[in-house]
Image (cartoon, rainbow, N blue to C red; front, side, top):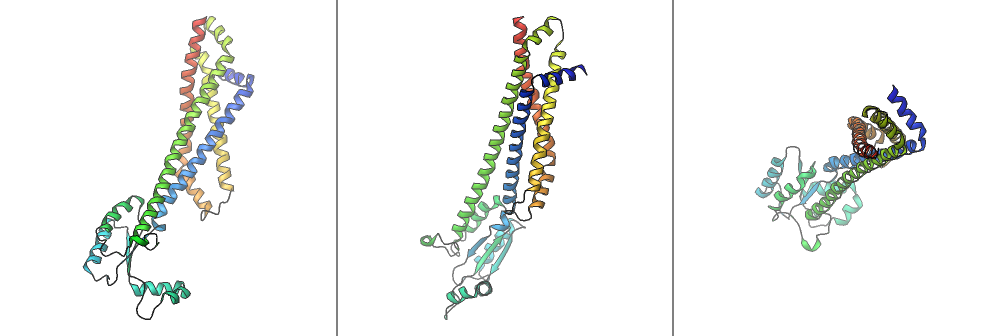
Length: 305
């Protein structure tokens, strides 16, 4: 109880430093939580990108699902992953779909001689790490796929689709990498702030530390109040930042994501343990910073006595 009284006394005596430390730490933890929400959103997009970015392989003229090469290609893609959805679409089916979707456009492309649309193979439900492997499989059957280098920018060309998908994958993975890097930077910033805060407290109470050493008080009495202080600061800063963060994301409605409230609830459930880990991490950083700074400067004070 005496240690708690001294810890509260130290906090009140230097209220501005205590309050500023709690506010700065709360702000940093708040931004870390925002980065985690961004990271979760990126992961959500990545996990659902397989249904958003299918591959469409336009076959050359006169190639149908009765040709051995087409049958072999479909079989090899299906055997690669049982969760892949591989659908053969004939030229007639493609034109019928176009006619239902856009009758005016169907009239433009329709000719008297033959159906201008090619048969195709549609591959859906592809995981991000599978695009490269599927590309290797498809490349072996390039002789049956309609692809022209001179018009490679056409959206209907398989290679152009793959390159666009690959660029999206690179952007998303790079976003996640930079998020982790920024979080690490914030954690390091927390360590620096705590280290300097403790040093300021020790410098502020340097005369009292010398007196307690002279009268024979042990290290528990010297270290104890600082220990209780960093526990209080850690709890308060984590509590404030997490409470404000949850309140904001629960009340702000974002229309960019379908059914945003359910998305936020899924985020909170998926990261419920993280908030406990975050508190433990902050306490560990406090303990490490406190141990390094207080040991160093208290020993320096002892040498001068």
